[in-house]
Length: 153
Image (cartoon, rainbow, N blue to C red; front, side):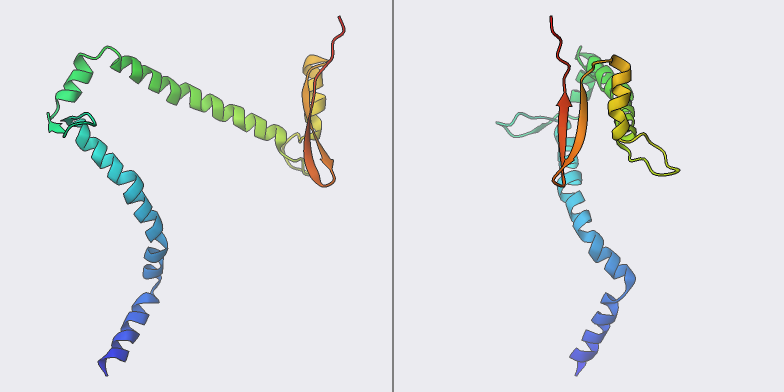
């Protein structure tokens, strides 16, 4: 007799929105823990150990960090390269990608963008007989044609 009442309580608990949110978020949480957080924690542990893959890790504490900051001549160079990449290379690539997206943006009345059809004309303005890419609709398929100038010498 107690079983149907218990099933009703479980059904009511499962019908709550918070439970549905947790159930929907569980695959993300499990993936985060398994593929991101656990490897990060293992790497943190190994950073405090003297470890090569053939032997057991031996705890050395902060010795690896002290060696990196004081004895390793390539450490500061690697930090500089990392900051160059993060502060210069990534933003430049982002700006370039946004410019290309602007060229590819379809023109709508009252909208913003130059559209694919104008790219050919604009590129020809820059270089006269410059090579350009043209997209055509052939049998309901997008076909990319690269036009290269031929120079007779």
